[in-house]
Image (cartoon, rainbow over all chains, first blue to last red; front, side, top):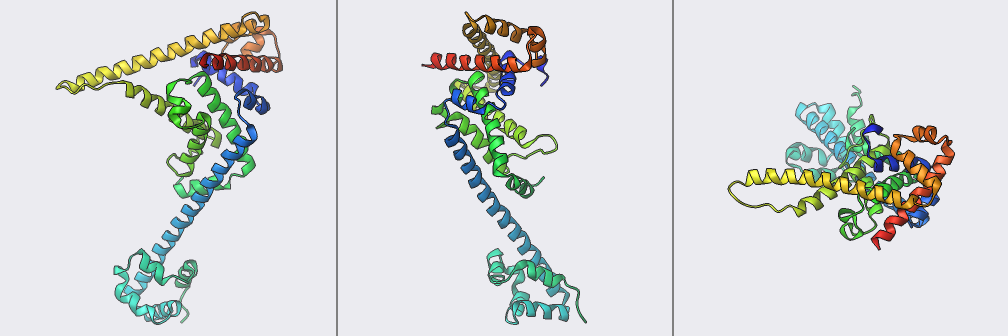
Length: 134
Length: 196
């Protein structure tokens, strides 16, 4: 907003913001706020938000990777390529590959997570993306 | 910027930087609350705690959860938080004002609602005028008997910005800052005493 359109109150606030630059202690004192306690509380709130947000980001990335891995496995199984299916067996152990083949479409997120349980999804995706050695 | 990207950017902001931002945001929110919207909607009772902290924490939260997008091409982090806090304040004023409006359920409901809306805007304008009047009163009361402050208030009313005030009074910026802080303190005390 141009200053010409601002009310006297708004202009006063702008001037105060400028005048209190570098005089934060005086501002907190006028507002009757204990600066250290107040800022510690705000920073703690930010830290809590940060933790929540990190966990959400990780969860989203994990779900994205699960989806990618599932799609790649599906493509390999549908291709019928024995070499690639053999690679799947290597990655998951031979017991899992037939189960994946039969049930992939029926498996929900939790089932897929169960299959990937002790494996690094990124390693699996990388393993599946590696060019085949004939 | 998608939510994940926004979270990553926010998580990259260091604590020292957050402290500076929160301090500036607190000053901005504190002044808005004190001089513009100190009644009803923003009372401790209505918000369930310290109003300044309520808006500062709320703005930060809305950005972290992705409820609000950080428009980085347009705003710095501080500016974006000010936009969010300002919007929260307006929303609370709107809620408090609309709670006053009684809807009359009749066949001509639409027309009556329209009339209510006009009343609402008129009321808002009236409130603005009332707040400006109270602020003028505060300026007059706080500068009374103090030659320097009286002069400053006259310059304040006649000028649009800091440079104009400096020119009009032939003062340097440092002097203006000192007098502005003095006046600010007096006005805060004035409103505090009025509340009691």
